[in-house]
Structure formats: structure tokens, C-alpha cells
Image (tube, rainbow, N blue to C red):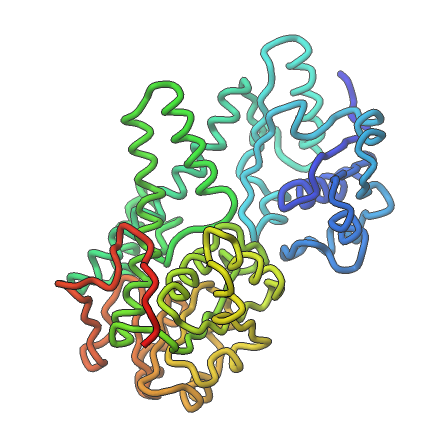
Length: 427
């Protein structure tokens, strides 16, 4: 059997970088070269400050960089010298979750390899199997044809996104009835046929994969004349958009039907904790809706650089003209963001947000002081926060009848839940 000694991976992003770093770490006899046209990104991979944040990644990279792991912009030579070129030769879809990617790579549920059903294709499949067998049990390595492999990737992310949209739809019903979506999720999750994973209600899913892969599935179904299937999966995206708009509308309604010129602290900008990735983050959309209503946003995230937040919010589809420069301030710590704010909005489930000194925060906020918990990270602190004086609104639950009531405007909604909110003139 052909033995792989040199691997080239094209693309030094969130997938290529960690994946090939772990391969080099687990296969010291294989030379792994990760190439990219972005010179600054390659320079970062070769520096003490890696271009992405992922728990455990820095240690893996430093253990083999310069030994059998290399990062380069010399794409042509790397391809010529390689026994295997990742991405372009075989279908080897990744099933990584940002924040746990290194553990996912070292201890995968499965490794899926697809290839042509030709002698050459099968030889390539077996050669790549041999690489993974350095640390993955053979029974966890699945081999399929190329179509099965690619559709498995799309279907896996579509099913996960579907579960999030499903529990988020139930969260809206819980808020209307007085149920608690966490209790509902626990109850249904104990059914072994359903399981308890991905039943965490929130302000909506983000990241580069879920929306992209669901929309790819929708496109594929439309192209293959399967409109009913396309509409089914489109609803997963529509529900996610609805959850974001619904949360923004709830903020506006609770703040006495206007946020114009009000200071709102946004805690968390990454699409999930333990990553600096902001792609399709719900924080971007919540910020957009609030900016469109004239709110002044003070944003803090422990891992997302200021420049990235500005770039995301300056996108033509998010803001117009000088909105970001007028309405957005990037804070260096959460206390600075909350100082003088009318409300605190938690958009990312960073553990540190559970440990903040909320009595200190409350003293510096305008009254009544609101907390909008879009990630249910403060569930165990509600009594304490209410004693301090906070008015609390959270996803999928009515916290207390003693607070200033949340009264959605029925006859004249703040903005349509089917469309982004319109701008309001300043008063």
C-alpha cells in the first residue's frame, strides 16, 4: 500500500490549521505543510500569537512547528512535493466544533473519508485511512463514495441546526405560557430517542458552518427539483432569524418602547464561547437591530479584537454611513462597558460573565437597570440579581412577576418580526 510521508493542506484557517497541526502532532514521521495565500495569516501561524484562538491549539502547534509542521505561502512547491493534498484529492469532511476542536480531532466520534469507486480512488482512501489509524481506532474510520461523504457533512450540520431552531421555537412558546424552556429541554432530553445534546435555547446559532451548510442543502434541493425538501430546511434558517429579531424586539419593548440614545452594554461578540470567531454571530444581528433604533452600544468580548468587531459591524448589510463610528464603542473590560448603561445584553456564553461583580455593575448603571440574558448563563443568579435591583429578561422564561412587566406592543409592534427594524428619527 502507498505510504504517505508528506501532506500539503491548502488553507490555514479555522479548519486547516488545527486539523493539520493535530495530524503532525500525532504522526511525527509525516511532514505536514499548511499553505495559504494570506501572508499575514501564515506569519501569525509562525509567531507566538496564533491567528485563531482554540483551547489547546497553541500547545499542539508549538510541540511540532519547525520539526514536522510548517506554515508557508509557497503553495506550488508544497503541492509538488506532497504525497497527499488535503481538500482537493479526497472528500474528508470535518466535524469539528469550535472551542473543542483539538479534543474533537484527537478523540473523534468518527472520521469520514469519501473517494471515487475506482482502483486509484480506493488506494487514495486507504492511504489516508492509514494516516488517521495512527491514533483513531479503525472501526471509527468510515469510508464511503464521494457523494455520501459530502452529503453526510451537510446533513450533520443541518440536523444540529434544526435542533437549535426547534428548541428556540419552544422558547417563544414558553415565554408566552409561563413554562421554562430549560425544564422542557431537560424533560424531553431524558428520552433516549431524543437525547439532551443541542437543546440549549439561546439568541440563535452562528458560526461559519450551520447557516452555510443548511443553505447549501436548500440550494441543492432546489437545483434537483425538490422544492418541498428545500422549504423544510429553509425554515431552520428562518426560525434562527426570527429568534434574533424577537430578542431584539424584547429588548426594545422592555426599555419602554425605545432605545434611541440609550447606552446598551453588549457582553460577548464571538458566536460562542472559547473562540474568537465572529462569523454569522448573533451578536452582529442584535447589534444591527439596536443600532437601527439609535442605541449606543458598548461592546466587550475577551477574545475578539476591536478591529474585527468594527469590520463586522461596518459591513454594508449591517450598518450605513457613519453608524458604527457614532453608535459603537469597544470596551476594554465588562465593567467599562456597563458603566452608565441602561441595559446589559449577554450574547455569548463566556464563563466569566457568571463571575462578574453585579453589585458593582448595578451601582454604575442607570435605573431601572436591565439584564437581557440571551444565553441563559445567569440562571443560578436570578434571586441574587433581583435582590440587587436588576430587572431580568431571559430566553424561554418569565423570571418574576415582581419586575417591571415586559409588555410586547400588540397593536403597534416596534418592528415586524418578519423584517429587520426600520430606523427611527431621533427624538
